[in-house]
Image (tube, rainbow, N blue to C red; front, side, top):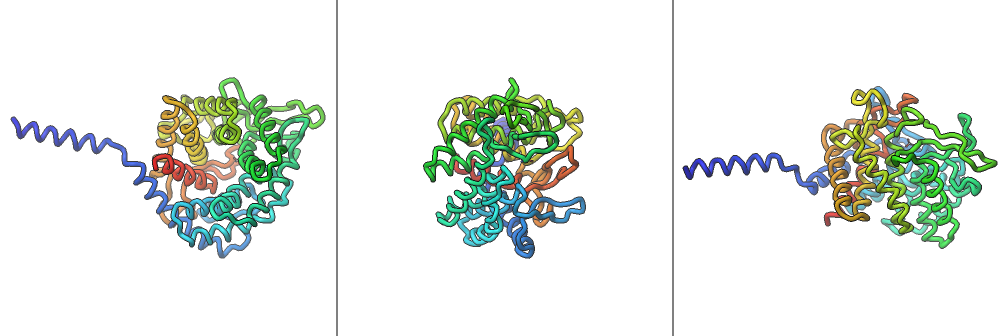
Length: 394
Ligand code: GLY
């Protein structure tokens, strides 16, 4: 009888330890080690392609690179900075410095709103980790360039130049530039930056969001009256749909605005978006969104790993700003997303996938552009989220 009980107890312990998920610290360590190897391979390729930055791969699996004025240019250098932060290995600092320098001229670029992505992910992380004063000057010049796109009668920074019948298009993604401008406010003491960030956030809250906290991708304004002229999409399934990455940009942007201002309205907005996403009936079980929540082809359509990575990173920060039970709900979702992204379903093999870290992102499905491919920003926010999760548990 006793022997039987021992066997049963042993069996139950074995079963319960089989079901227990692997500890996150092991997953993070393994993913960071893999990413350091993978991005060393990527660096070795990129050093032979002067002046350009990695972007994605083509249908044949070959690397596609971009000019520094492409909106994603800052993510590869930014990820190298994160790898330096994690490892302390001076090799990654040197790689990051070299790739960051390729983007410097964009500080004078007044033709795009994407300077936050381009400059703050690269030079911003570089400044944070090295204190290099030259980076600060470059960033302040870039911030000045970016606010030339602010339209006072609208209360927003213009995203794209006028096109497709849009007089002054503002996209939800633009919330991601505000971290850069709030940094400029803190460093320069110029309250213009603060006012622009708060006005842009408030105007976006008023016009970009539906009552369920989903958002339109593009809101275009009349340049004379400052009123909304159109609410549409460019990269989503339809004007009325919830394009996944856009929802995640919005979430991340309002988390940042709450962190930077302490204004409750931004925390409320961020939690509203988080709840919309987490409770969405078409959020897949692994936490990695389909490219658009309203694609009628779901489940037979593409995922967007970049949306999962951006959302995970934002949720980890949000979990530290909120009380229970919401706080754990956000962290648990982020953990699920990181476990999925770190699994072979999304994470590439060494030397595969054009040396990018993650597979299965979607750039713009309606344009048949970058569908089910690696993208530098998926990698960037994945690594950022891993570091944020690790810091929480330290
Ligand atoms: N900012 C463009 C995108 O998210 O595709």
